[in-house]
Image 1 (cartoon, helix red, strand yellow):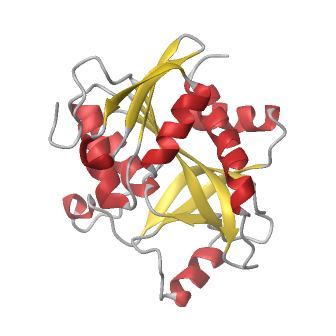
Image 2: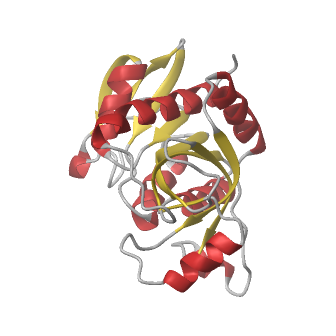
Length: 235
């Protein structure tokens, strides 16, 4: 057990999927895993462990934002031996060719600041995904006839952003979408020797103002979970 995860040794699998919302973790575990077992509920952050095609998998919430994710990623890797962490979540589209419901597979994650920033001092560390996971996720999405986009994303510190100039520069430099966690996940994984990836569903669009209807979010989220699971394990 740790301060934030009440699981016992052996309760957490080496492969962990991390949605921000703990209730999405519950839904994904009950939908995709065989015999999911609740292994954490400290502070309402739910984690479940089961199997997918015979492979042990934990689906554990990360909370909103990089500080929250950093706590769980650190403890999952250092204290429970997690070796592969895949963020599954929604994002806002930032390029005209990225459409609602499309899947973004984040190769890199730009940020203004992260909880790890103080370690690097004057260095601009470039957080990036594990290549093997990224490659497999792309082909899994294509096999499902989804529309995957591979490239850079922006991990923002704030949800209600009041920096339109920053959004303009991210878009100008080809950033595909914006979310709030991946940059720190990639940095923590690199530091602790784990593999990391973010697979994201475009739920709204900063350029067009479109948004995915609530009735369709669950199905689109399910596609993303399937891509993540197929990327994590051999076919």
